[in-house]
Amino acid sequence: MEKIPILKMGQFLLVTIQVDLYDRLALNLESDLVQMVSTTEARGVLIDISAVSIVDSFMGRIIGNIASMSKIMDAVTVVVGMQPAVAITLIELGLPLSGVHTALNVEKGMELLKNKILVNGEVPDYDDDEQYDNLDGTE
Amino acid sequence: MEKIPILKMGQFLLVTIQVDLYDRLALNLESDLVQMVSTTEARGVLIDISAVSIVDSFMGRIIGNIASMSKIMDAVTVVVGMQPAVAITLIELGLPLSGVHTALNVEKGMELLKNKILVNGEVPDYDDDEQYDNLDGTE
Image 1 (cartoon, each protein chain N blue to C red):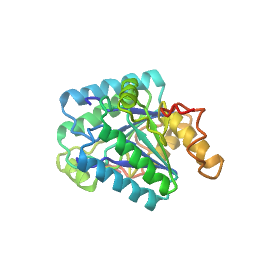
Image 2 (tube, rainbow over the protein chains, first blue to last red; image 1 turned 180 degrees about the vertical axis):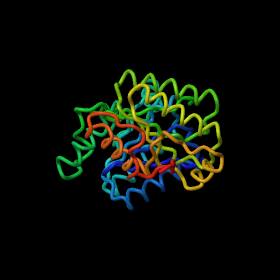
Image 3 (tube, helix red, strand yellow; image 1 turned 135 degrees about the vertical axis):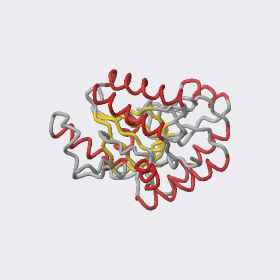
Image 4 (cartoon, chains in turn red, purple; image 1 turned 45 degrees about the vertical axis):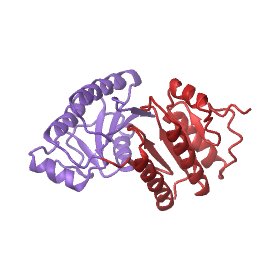
């Protein structure tokens, strides 16, 4: 099983990361996701990392990449389920995940996506998400 | 990462199986899921096996177990995303997954669950699911 499944749920795509993202798997995930955003016309991508207990700079970069790619494809990325230890590590590694929306769990992430996309009818900038948990900390 | 994450989405729980279910992991999944059904009062469990390309009798049994346990806890289990090869193998192994609802993908599975639970207001028997893809084939 060398592929991370991407689940389509309405206008959103859901990815659950359960295994270590080594090079090939991460690159496959990136390309699969962009492909899937294109074919399904998804407006949002939810990445659940609740099973991830150890994070390194590579993984941080991959998540940032996915968010940037999705943004170009007109989809919003929300990372959900981050463990406290992972948040600590990311900040200590100097990876504040700026530009990535975060939420505590899938339900809250879904709500955030709906607020950002369905209600407004457009994808707002990455700056106006103070009401949700994020790691950015720049405001 | 020795835990399969269980995502709560409204009244349903979503589990994506991406790794081989060896003994300990499968037992943990069973107990976590039952615990989660109890704490979240979930009415349905969606198990996505789209990443599973090889299936054995152990895995077939685990899925059956989860469905039976959920049923006792008053939740309906739907298995989604089964690959054609997996369906072939299950039947050849003599495991028709009777008592387990199946659907082609998460969206259809979610719809099936909603039909079974939200509209009717109660969980109907396992017998009246002819309108959906299932592997039962007994009707």
